[in-house]
Length: 169
Image 1: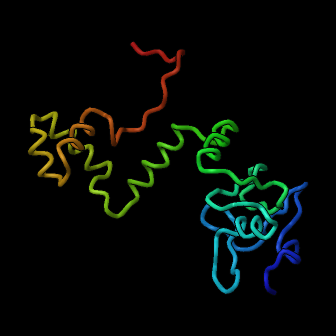
Image 2: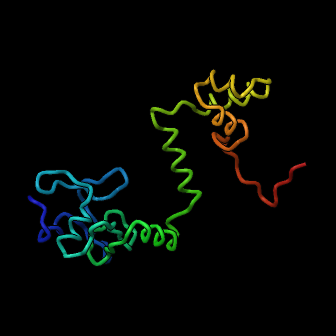
Image 3: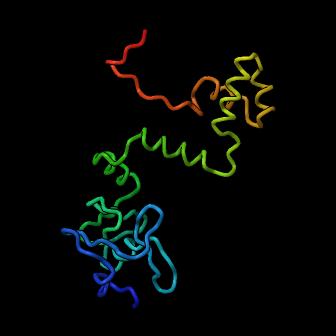
């Protein structure tokens, strides 16, 4: 069956006033479908444009915060700046969360030269007296990267936050 606005409901389940997509989704849970023979993850943009929403140069944000929702009444067209402000105002954007997600993605990239065991080795060798220049050439990274690792600005060990009730002699 070909996906159209008329039969969109047959591809979705109702959950309150949301219309939740039952088909394929992206890795982040957003609707993905074959439209006019091409697979797209922009099903929301397609629905919004067919309903007459002006979306040129804008993001289609669903205000119910359900990734799979395709209810047109929940869509808002926003610029990237407006979308970020809206997410921050609704508690969906935390700088700590964003920074952690970026760091995790960077570490997972194939081109990453360091991993946690190599960062520990850099710290160990520096504590033994090795220069940053020596460490940089030994590990194939810049002196700046070595300095950040040694000083705890990157590749930090994960530690639990200290509580006001934690006793430390």
